[in-house]
Image 1: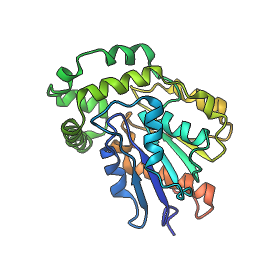
Image 2: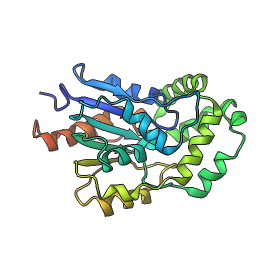
Image 3: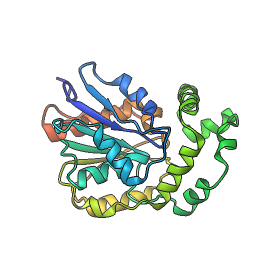
Image 4: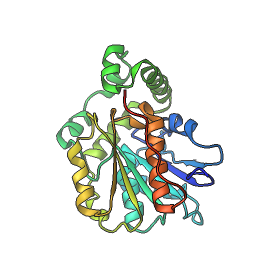
Length: 250
């Protein structure tokens, strides 16, 4: 039996807050996996505390036996929910994320730039290929997702959440998390530096770390490798099956 069969995965999205970024991984999941994609509003600016509550309100109170998968921006949200006891999940998987601002000065500067102008500019394909590092297929996929995000999320929302990232610090909750945790780290992440992992390894002694070759958008660029990392972790904590080996990087 597949280790994820019959499981419920709650996905907390990246900075766009739409959950569109989950689609590549979602398509690779077994059909009997139940998925709940958390979404943040695009028509009003929430504080960090309100963002945490917004996520919690979308998870049924009686649905505690879930796998929580939090990507990038939502990592601190999930850490707060689990560490404070507001969410009693089966396990927590953190992907390309942080417990405090990964680049405080840069993110603060970005939050004050006229993002409306930058977001609407066409992005050179060669530059995207360098950032995404997943080849033509990954570049096409990212462009499609990005165009969809731009039509749904105002630029001011990105600026607001960038400012939120520059101020966030949830390290205090890390040592209070008592459920199994896994951190998926992209080896070529230019957004979240490798040093961000130290906060997690120092506070969570039994943290399982999986490094996957690829960019910050690892769930999108390497969905199959990410899925294997997730199923291996779930197998480990449930004892349902042995670990699978990922295909060698090419």
